Image 1: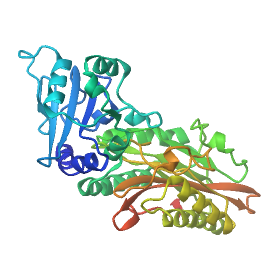
Image 2: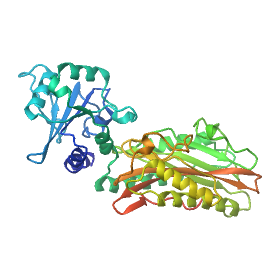
Image 3: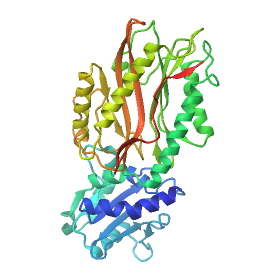
Image 4: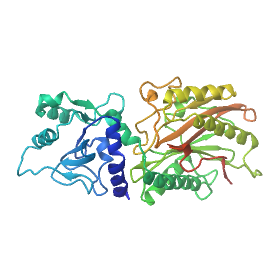
Amino acid sequence: MRDAILKDRFENVLPKLMDENDIDMWLVIGREYNEDPVMRTMLPATWLNARRRTILVFYQNKTTNTTERLAVARYDVGENITSAWDKEKQANQWARLVELIEERDPKTIGINVSEHYGIVDGLVKTDYTELMDILPAKYEARIVSAEKLAIGWIETRTSKEMELYNQLVDITSAIIDEAFSTAVITPGVTTTDDVVWWMRQKVTDLGLETWFHPTIDIQRDDEELKSQVSAFSKDEEEKVIIPGDLLHCDFGITYITLNTDCQRHAYVLKEGETEVPTFLKKAFAEGNRVQDIFTGNIKKGRTGNEVLAMSLAQGREEGMRPAIYSHPLGNYGHSSGTTIGMWDSQDGVPVAGDYPLHENTVYAIELNTTVNIPEWNKDIRIMLEEAGFLGPNGFRYVNGRQKEIKVVK
């Protein structure tokens, strides 16, 4: 499946992105165990790492309207990238790269350097220096940053990937549902760390991976609401789960190069209770309302900062206290693309927040709203996160969202 998805991306995504960004040739260079993050997304299923130094060359021939996919390496890189180096004929790998460049004479040569996006800044100093040392002056002047091309490659999702994403979100939800149940939680006995490590083990047993360590936290009537700094430190104090607790998880998994990122709530019923208290249901509904406002503003071409400002203003006008901090999601959990707020940057995010939204991209719709609970004589924070897709028909959740607090009986 991974190789089929990759073949589709190379044939249908890459040429379009190279044309849109006016880059004739794209060089992606990395070494074993020190791969360019973009290169990692291009390796076939049987390659867990690059081999020795691997140089990928993508050339858009505008005369024939074809895209060459070559590797200055001893081997083909799977079935999608063909080896173009015979060491017995040309001993110097860099010299062979120069030969390929001179034969094609590209007007622009993109390399992965970027000041603001770490994932697309994968060309290490050693490889950059060696490349520039051997490159003829004529071609040095044609070197450009492939930042936008690389972001496009990282953020763009295909229909094949979206079919897989639906399944991946469903699996994520199922794991959370089981974690937030009496199959895992015995009130008065089970701790938050017990649930966290149960989730880690469950993911391992399923043959999946977690891309970050999960968290389970508790809000209850006799404890003050944590500050934002404390809430986002991820350094949660272990607590025994008891009846009356409002539970919250932050959890994500990785499968076939895609990632999920999900936050959900559950409530542990007290003796005599048969459902979540009405005041908590109303608080949760405010969280859903902030989601509706926010996702209603997600439109192609708008920047993250524009969407952030519009959504916060609308939420505040309705009397709520929202915070929005959504990020691109896909090949990486905190991926490259349009950032829509950060928890400590509610006035906008420089550069990444100014990047416009593109179609066929996925985001972690991550936000919270602070709600006063008179019954508890305190504020609580409803924290939600779901995978959302911006496609040709507008925004949709990848596979639904939480609409009510789950009950732990």
